[in-house]
Length: 113
Length: 115
Image (tube, rainbow over all chains, first blue to last red):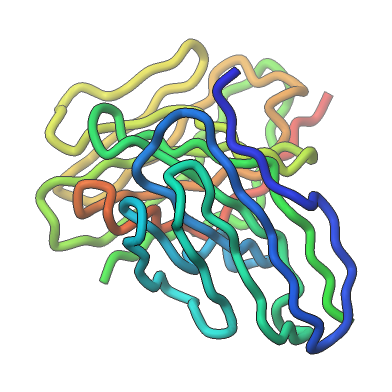
């Protein structure tokens, strides 16, 4: 089944404790991205990657890092989480040819205390 | 910069009736795509319908259709014969740059279906 998976689905952590949210897709998509969703703000792009070893900042990159060492994986790293990073996070992927439809993961609910 | 505006934070409709959700956008790009996503309480993002800017014909998917007015930069979603399962947050989104820029989302419209 074609899908985007994220882990963990829920995470409660404390300020300053490094964490990684994993994202994996099995559709051989070149493009992957991370979004955060906050009430009243919709979804905003954090980082994206056009292909392996190619990443770039989105609209709200501060406090986040990403890496793209393999085509299927695109982890989101919070080196020192803060309460303002409490949010719902989505990973998405798409092919750079064809329909451009982005496929979303199920979301990760992160709470930083 | 690209912007997407949804001016209706919440809409309510009677079951079996028709409802229209509004969306306007702004971009200087000539090549772009427009989308409506549905987010039910499960939080999953589900693509409802998409429209290529170069196509004049409005997209339709069963009970869902769009009114794409390119000159006015308007992209409204019409849901016919509303069902209880249509209750969700609906997000309008735009993609430019051949996909490289990702999606720019509106703030969403919460759709309530009254039985």
